[in-house]
Amino acid sequence: MSSIAGQEWFSKPNLQRILALLNADGGETRIVGGAVRNALMQMPVGDIDMATTLSPQDVTERAKDAGIKAVPTGVEHGTVTLVLDGEGFEVTTLRRDVETDGRHAQVAFGTDWTEDAERRDLTINALYADASGKVIDLIGGLPDIEKRNVRFIGDADRRITEDYLRILRFFRFFAYYGSGRPDADGLRASARAKDKISTLSAERVWSEMRKLLSATDPSRALLWMRQSGVSSQVLPETEKWGIDAIHGLVAAEQALGWAPDAMVRLAAIVPPEVERIASMTSRLRMSNADAKRLKQWAFAPTIDPAITDAAFDRLLYRQGVEGMILRLQLALSSARADVSAGEAAMQKIARLSALLARAQKFERPNFPLTGADVLAAGIAPGPKVGQILNELEEKWIDFNFSLDRSVLIGKLKAVVGTAS
Image (cartoon, rainbow, N blue to C red):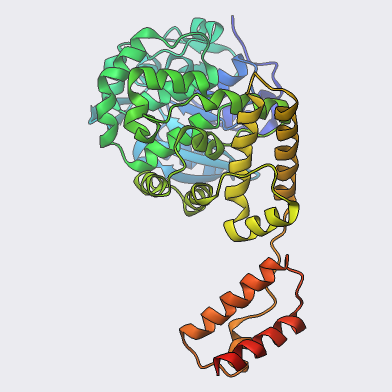
């Protein structure tokens, strides 16, 4: 019998208090999904979700009577989040799908645990643990946990038709939990339905891809996405560029202690072409921060390892630090992956490593003048103010940011005198 009873997270008082509350007086509540899966696979447990035979109203009323905050985070789908000492526990009433359209599902609440399990996506995500810690497997998920097999519940085509995002979830969970080759039925079903990915919202697609790219090693999942034609639907930019660089990047991350970074992985598999990057970030509706970082990278020049420190600082100031760091990480991982590394290659790796460290420590200096200084010098408001300020800033950069305010004021007066 499988059990998670001995694990530290399962014994925490807040979790046990909620389980006791929702299992009293005829209710039955079990932990479900990721917490059970990760516990069985000896991986860290994050969010703790529960399934219950109680209605959302009953869950809310019980929580209120016990002094626990209840938030109706998805009450139309049966989900209430109970908050205890700042920790949230999602509690969802058992459900069955009434109607699906490939993007959304209409559900009906019930009390049948098997029906609830069968409507879920993957076998490893449909395991339950009761209040004693006993694991309950209604769909054959335990053997898949042991084999690290990522497999759809029942008919793969049907599961995907219920929500086409499950195509990307299949590959994402394979990246995190799979071993060997992906499940053949799931792979074929994903390939058959790949065109339907275009019916999903860009936000859902990018959210799923971002998670996949954040896996410790997403390279095998990306390979099978390419083999099945799925990657061309999501990231057509990779078609003529390829995903081969991802292997060297992952190896560099593991050797150098870099944390997995979805944006670095994405940059490794798409071309650094400004227009295509702008189109991609817009199509996937990336956050402003993610889009800016990728655009900085696309604009950043290829870095010559022979560049001097001073010239490199000027480049960092003009180009932006984040894009240059990304460019250096990819250059360094590529250099490390060169199996023909000789003395010259080792020197290149050492210099790129030094430049990366310098970029990571770089603090952008503040230009000492403002538009107010130009106006005070007698230039009328208008485009001329910005032109003069830019001219002086370029001189300040060329002198490696060493000109202080008094020197720059002198140069400003000289420029104004010339302009007059």
